[in-house]
Length: 82
Image (cartoon, rainbow, N blue to C red; front, side, top):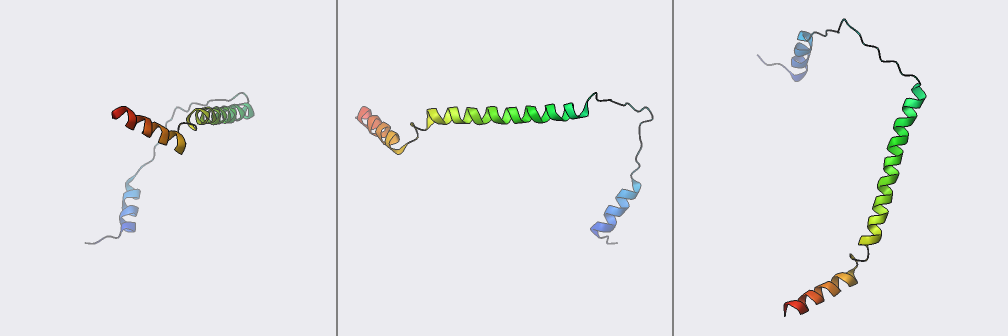
């Protein structure tokens, strides 16, 4: 007997039962706006810190990654190996 994917899905879904906990725990927030703001401010601060670290690292690495510097290091390495 062949079943389509849709009919099999419907069959599986019918067997599931949802049960809710009888003992409900309610968590009240003192200031909902403050909670939201603090989460977004934290994420924004972390993003700015990460961008600053990228800029600081780029200042250090950019001179080393130039073609001139890489060629100079290759020539220096070749001279030392002779």
